[in-house]
Length: 266
Image (cartoon, rainbow, N blue to C red; front, side, top):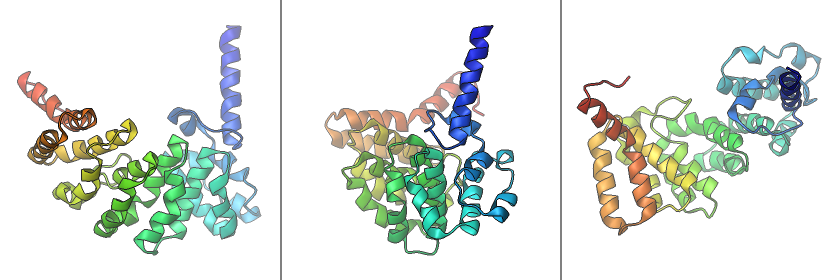
């Protein structure tokens, strides 16, 4: 019993440290447990009005918490202080900074918007990298053709996190994000981002390429099969390409298995 109580006390101390911005999160569960109101108040960027009008962030979804926190800081702090949060020790604060920087860059040209988010996309913390693409997905989706043209250069970056961002940000059915209807309808328009990475060596990037194609397979299974068949013919037995294509077609295999067993997928 004492051991259980000690464990609970340690866990509580851990969440308190995260909520003060004193530590980096280790899991999504820790991010979700952070008291965002405490975290924002700890930044010392808000005046009395800013603190008093801070909404109860724990009552909304995590992505909306990030956006709302960013918007509140922009309204009640100076821009230079908000941008400086990009270097904060807390990954969640850096994530909020990503949303703030993206909001401050709204209306900018696509290359400038991408430039503003690049350091977040290349952050060493998994959470910040996810917030980075979420922060700019909507404006990039509004002009996805220009976004694709600009992101092609990112697919040849020597930094794998940047290459991964180039694919992840415009997934047709992005996780925790609005679907991009044009890419769902015509996934071939995303090929300039996928084609350069068909022999990608990093599994982190491979997974993003495969997930992009797996998204497309839910609307255009025959197209994904054709792409994978071509890649496999061209790859000369390349293990990376084989892994990408296997993962890309996992939903198709599940659908076939369900059909063979007389089941339906939810």
